[in-house]
Length: 625
Image 1 (cartoon, rainbow, N blue to C red):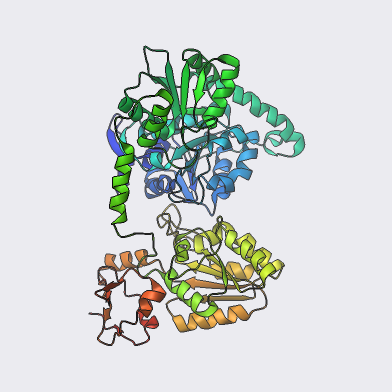
Image 2 (image 1 turned 90 degrees about the horizontal axis):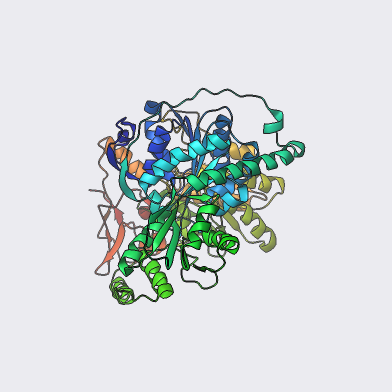
């Protein structure tokens, strides 16, 4: 991890190489934001992680909230008292927070409040590709879209300014390529965060009963008219490339703009480019004038035709004769997946009739040929991962016929062979609820697989429902004592906060008992015999049962041992081995390999967890050197 103290340097005009997410963290410091909240999720995780590392020194408050709606509630509470705040989340997190966000738009805020939503085109680390610009339309909130780390920092500050002018939350929408691109960022001056707020009672504004919310809707609409004026003069909406010819114009935003700039140069297009950084509300007058100046206008954007739909609506009133090309009537650009210079160049070439100077098809064919000869490297559970032990125990007891409702986290990788644990997965916390419906209508053994952080995030209501309605399901909570998939952030069960300070641990088993579950056990998945006995008991329980499989994440455990100077002694394959391949077939541990038809242990990967010893029928593994 880079030294994040560089974010604290009060050196205006200094240029630093930052991730887009780190640049947003710096923007928060320059904006004087006092409260930062999050539920970690890629591609947004590094924003709050960076701030957590330096929060105490920066003089602000940062917390890892139990989920995104609570993160918004905490930050909105601070902003209602006049303290500047920021909440960061991945795109699907805004689904969780939307109930609060939609009505918060009516109530508004007194201190500036930025909600960062990081979209994930191509589903690099997500279950869908939703386009969160539509949340700006749905909620009637302003939205800004940076295209690089410098803009990510600058727009964080702009978002705070707009928020305080309008007394509304402002969405800052990034994408994976903006969040995870590292680029030069020129610093501005640091501001002193204010953590002291004052709550001013105003029932008509803040208590959203129908009699109060109806007039507040009108107030929101008036505020958005002011936002349109801001958008028309915003420095983030501008023609970045002018053309002598009035034949062709291109409108783009966010990371798509970067592909447009490269593709236009590649094709030698004589085209002007209108780059939009404030994409809700759009600068309708600016766009109308831009349309009137061109015969053809091409809209290039990732995912949904959000800009295209609105630009066409503006054209109907302002420039009926202009030809508008994008992804609606004829799909010159895809609605799904990430764009690239190749994809954008092809779309621009199809529209303009230009010949592509590079044979992308031939390049792709060569690339595919090379890839076919490379060994596949699918994502897998780490060597020594306690989830592998948990899945082995579960499959050994429950067998092939059981139905597994799994959830969002590292343990989703259990769907891969040879473990094959995971038959349905939708969203955070859904494993427990879907397992209940499946169990009810099939009568089969049904196991809900959920992680520790996910349990706190969204699993508790499902467990209460299982107890209330007496659904016969086994809830397997895989507790590796961290939020592993997104970067080892703390959660209520870890006893550590976002301020890097100790806190009271919230134990999952106590929560389960408090929810009314009658059968609750904590097991160590590496103690195979004890764990399997508990599983058999859980399956026999007439109602919902809860098993907490608790063992630390292998990466954290190894890191801690090495920090203490403890040497990890890898296990060895002894001469008792018959090469029966049981360990390979049952576990899929990356430390177990096959060379010349013989099982080997990769000493660089082995964490000496001991699971393979439990599995080997010939006791041919052991004798660490």
